[in-house]
Amino acid sequence: MVAPVSRIHSGRKGRAGSHKPYPIRPPAFATLDKTEVIEEAVRLAKTGIPSAQVGMILRDSHGVPSVRAVTGERMTPLLAGQGVKPDLPEDLQALLKRVVHLQRHLGVHKKDLANRRGLNLMEARIRRLALYYKRHKVLPEDWRYTSASAVLQVE
Image (cartoon, rainbow, N blue to C red; front, side):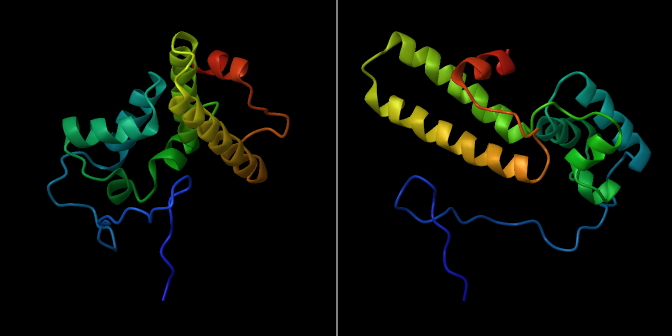
């Protein structure tokens, strides 16, 4: 029996959720074939849209329920293979964006202690994620998180 996983900064258990059925087969109703899906994904990614949003656009506008089912590859490695790779991983970029927003909020509302704690927790999460990405050679070894560099990387 596997022990339940808990949330990082709370005493509660993790969220349960449904999972995609395994194995993944290409759906019969998908109108685009593999090469068209790849071309459309690369075109969207070159405009600066993150890979998760590229998948949502393909799902909602083009009728591709799962890029992985059609192409046999996940979205981020597929885009990296096509030469469209972001400077920072998508999850780290999203955390940096949230930190910058929270810093601006705390600049105006200096006594908001609950959000100041949230900022500290988010910064700790960024540092843990950065260590993971440095270990797996996704980020350079000299990459460091600072609040000033977060503003520059988001904008």
